[in-house]
Amino acid sequence: MTQVAIFETVSAMRAAVAGWHAAGEKVALVPTMGALHAGHIALVTEAQRHARRVIVSIFVNPTQFAPHEDFKKYPRTFDNDRALLAEANADAIFYPSVEEMYPAGFATRILLLGPAAVGLDDRFRPTHFEGVATVCCKLFTQSRADYAVFGEKDYQQLKVVTRMAADLDLGIEIVPLPTFREPDGLAMSSRNRYLSAEDRERAPLLHKVMQELAARLRNGEDLFKAVAEAQGEIISAGFELDYLEARHTQTLAPVTGLGDGPVRLLVAARLGATRLIDNIAV
Ligand code: PAF
Image (cartoon, rainbow, N blue to C red; front, side, top):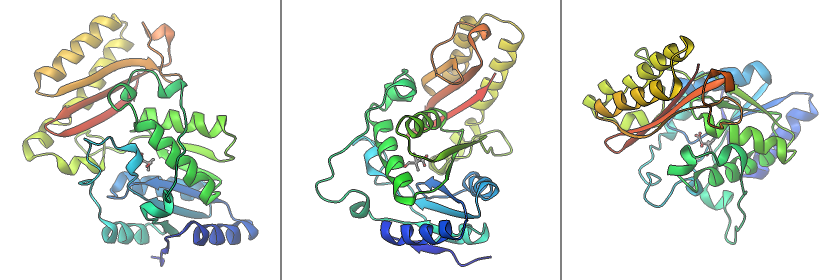
């Protein structure tokens, strides 16, 4: 177990990264909002495969939450996060304040098109990706990391950030990692801890329905019919469904069949006040 350095300022992080780079060491960033779980630790392990040094940022980013969303009650578990990261041998935590990230007068946002404007999460959270892209752009340029590792669970986010990093020549390679799941198939998420015991039991159905849908599509069933039936199954199980859609894996554009693919299934649904998202390849 190592001692994890904690940087609260951009200048402290940059000084460390400059030293590592001067020593010929690559640096990987794992951006998080804390409340870490095994899925985050898998991102750290993946980062360590790419780079000698790994920084994990912990910042609950206010600009990606709408006023009615859970910014205030988003779980903040820094002491536990720090212990998990020490155990995982991360080198440093970037733990800035809101003022460090958004000083008085901050007035810039990134305008996103492409995978950020396809009618999936952007339809239900219209300002979300603008906030994600803005903070990620800042984290990438603040850290000057060589790699940033993102989980596939937030699939649209992964596509948005990958596009932005390429389009803005940010000089960082975005590394994707498949979704980490609980033994019953539920995608790991910091928000799972909000679920009541009853909803936690129901939640894995999302993944099960998606797996069955993927199998039906691979068997050549009609996409519109199979997707509509899967949507119905989720609603009948008591979820409030935002969307369940089949999209092109890269562009996230709608598809009419596997011939338009490769195809990815993406879902967002609510159980009580908890919004769950998931996706799988067909
Ligand atoms: O996926 C998340 O936890 C957040 O959206 C991210 C990438 C850390 C940006 O705040």
